[in-house]
Image (cartoon, rainbow, N blue to C red; front, side):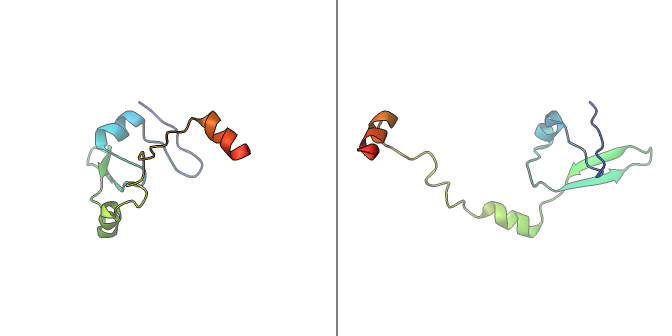
Length: 82
């Protein structure tokens, strides 16, 4: 598996590796070089503020997927247009 280094020095971690490591957007990552010159990538322990942000409930999560509207789109549009 390979990737390309951008002019800004950035790389994309392949999805297969992100999934295997449980990396999500915003995850902290540690890089190290071992004695044989290989780069080692590890998921960094979450900082205290990051853990606090992750445990904070999402104010929209309680409402997500809860709409129980009996209207069909065409019926609702007809009502709104009349």
